[in-house]
Length: 446
Image 1 (cartoon, rainbow, N blue to C red):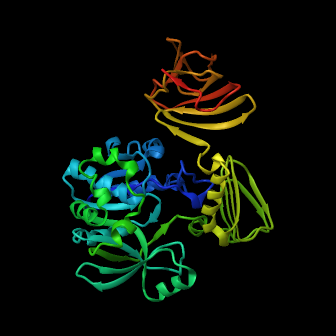
Image 2: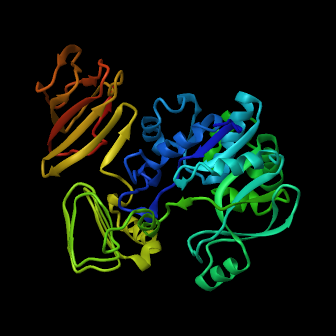
Image 3: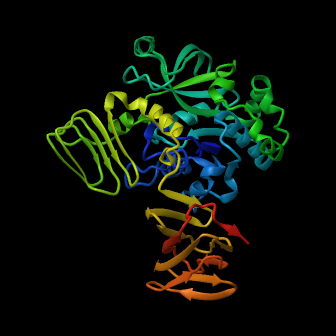
């Protein structure tokens, strides 16, 4: 093990449309777990921690509490930077650069997406590139097939470090992809290495509309809504004369579609990739992902089947990239399942909607140690709380009481109340809401 860089910057935003319904706009793919080793985000952080001096994570307001929950004990809270709104990778990297310049005086940075699978041998390549951090270093993956879901980099001449980046081709059609592979082009990994001062200079030249606000982190955040929604690739990398490509031939996978998930998973004797409680007969070449219920199939071939608590996806594997178009259709029809996941994260923890119907809703609440919900009341609903794990400190109209496992309490409409977790372990509560209006906006916070 060796430290190669001062800071690893991990980009943890995104919308995850191509991995719907497991990934949602407010629950993107970096929070997914493909195995028992944690989410993609957690694995990215754990992998990087072995080789970098420190870690900084950039996410947005909508995903901040989930990132904070997953990375507790792994990344310092002050090193999780919160964008007011998602604005693609160029503003996110600008925010990270300004923060690191103010906190550490700059230094060398390795930017990693939070949703890639990559072997630790990659850091050997990054170590070689470290000496060239005064350039903008890219990492090109040697293609294993003519992929249409990745961008390509055409390398130029050797420049004393790696190869100059001669041309960029974004997600080509099949025939052009075959041509790119034949011409020894690389897949663009989306991983970058640079010195902070160099990248800030590139912002000044290539994206002055962002650089103008990089006087301080405070000013940049205050003007974030007005920044262009643009990727670092389009905004800087493809314009820069300093872009240098370092080839990497080790294990790498951008888990960007259900087809890529199928590729990653081990297959059974019928070439099926299975996850969860699944039973199948005469089924082959399928990905079957089952989260909460038994999923049973008969006579299927070359399909994607994704069964979650609140949505079911059936798709031909050939059309895996079209899932993002489906999500856009769902959003046009105002289906909340396109955006919202069944699990919703808050500052105090998270909740899961277990069931709902006319005049009632059932939730499972998890309140983290030392956290509390706001002091509040509701105009239209009453609540019943049952403690199933931990200890709850309940405040009702200024009066405190403690509830332990298997104990319950009733909170009528319009009564001011709060739940706190005074203990050292997570507090789990079943909440039953009853009333004529049960939406989240019926909360009056005191």
